[in-house]
Image (cartoon, rainbow, N blue to C red; front, side, top):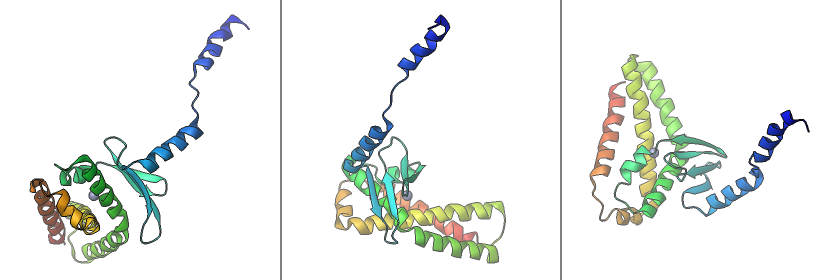
Length: 183
Ligand SMILES: [Zn+2]
């Protein structure tokens, strides 16, 4: 072998051999066992997945297309809870976003139609409208979480200060109301 080829050959042996197929299998196994990942079919028949175990970001989506988003609302709502209760409720909340997607889309269509016909068209009004849509989605997803956890919801929060939840419901109601004022 000519000396000039030696470094290339050497670097090739140093190249890490990654067994992608088995890594993927391990990942799926880990996720299936994990309390931070779950896959379920929505009431309208679509297979969705929620992953809250990937570091800072939460991910939720359809099939294998998961959209990362900051877990701000879950962080606020779950302040003071035990880790496993926080995870359980966060997962239900994320799944709630997917379960309520048709209701959210219906609301979006109605709201956008009203905005076009009766609303003003300033940037501020559209911005208020857009943010209020997300407040609506957060509200119905948390209502879904409350409904789905039943009496456990109250139990989880028994000894937890209510301030973060009061802040959430107050802020979301004001933002939702601001959206209707913008019409
Ligand atoms: Zn949310």
